[in-house]
Image (cartoon, rainbow, N blue to C red; front, side, top):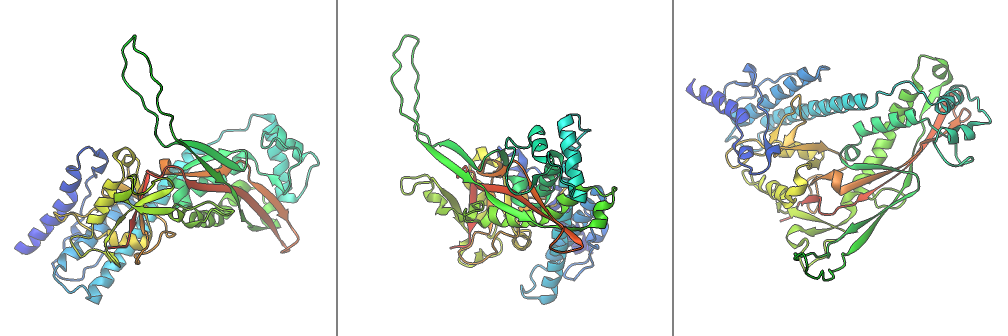
Length: 462
């Protein structure tokens, strides 16, 4: 009985107190709200325990409580089996099952939060501009019935969708429909939800970045002002590539006036767009597509910005300390703490970790030197955190294999820029798959690293 009491008190203390976060000087973002451990999460030690069911509730508060309950069960399972063989299949299977449920619930929680935020941002009122209203009406008639007005091009110009009266390749969707597509994309594309997104009118985005070199000095009121060194500027250019989706609908559905065609199109194309974008933003080679942040040259962070290696165009990385994974138990989190501090303090305020669900299952088990878990479940106010920073799961990130870069930590708002060319274009095809009507939808997107100091990587290497 005494052992059980100690186990229960230790579990409660682990969640309510986090000494590691509390002593991280100057980084208030590491403070983590307390969680409540339900009574069922305090079973007898060294046994395989029952856990709460992981069906995702629809209420945000209930979802947070379910995640906390699963997290408490996970920690209790780990603590109750301390000292058992690492290859105990029954224990590992149970931990893997709970871990998978936590991942599922956290993902559902994040999607719910993002959709609520998108809905608040997208609450558009009635259209008052008569030119925009005229274009919307004409577009809806063409979308549903195929009635193509001869003035559609002129209506696009009047509605300020384009400055050209006769562009190629289908019609431009109304602004409200394009905004709906972008909002849905923001909830399903991991990098897009974290990066800076800019809309442009052309096919290329350029900006000059100062590499330093400008000098200054102190002078008196009547002293001469000597010339200072000229700053070094580098140009960053991001080209756009075309991404497409081709959803189909029945004519019966299109005839139904109750169907919200804008929402339908946004839901249909967002899945395909997000899959294509997501891969390119992480791994893309930049040829007719975005350049992913893992496609840039890398350099050991100890050499970053020194005279040994030019930092321009490269991302700094930290090694895990083991050739095929993380260090042994008790030391595995050290490299992640090194990764955390490899990023300059000025970038850490808005930084987050990006990794796959598989790797998340590994780091979720990590503790600091005092036995406190470094991962914390989401609350009603914030998403799940690791070392006090938000975690973003993207299965385009590599796994834990020799030489791979499975975890990125950075301020993606400052480090990676996504370029959307204004205008989503649609071609209506009622012939290819009768009786279905296809909508070949295209959009031009680009992406690339625009601040190489703002993103750091973890490499599986000794």
